[in-house]
Length: 105
Image (tube, rainbow, N blue to C red):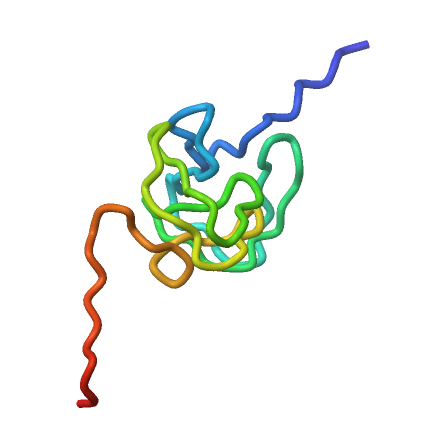
């Protein structure tokens, strides 16, 4: 009897750049509703994730650092579940300034 091949721990369409990262990078555009494997668990994507963009590989609490390349790149501004798209709508950069206007337009 042939032994089945092991299930990949991380979907081949996701790239985790460092083992300590809590985000991965989509190597192709992933559509909302698709299922990906993240650390041995099937996760249904709630968002469309364009090629080269970040996807949560673990639960990230609001205020928690987002880790990519083994280093913090920003702070989560909201709770982020595994498989969710990470971008400016839920991440504040630790490197780029955020400009606001104090007067109405």
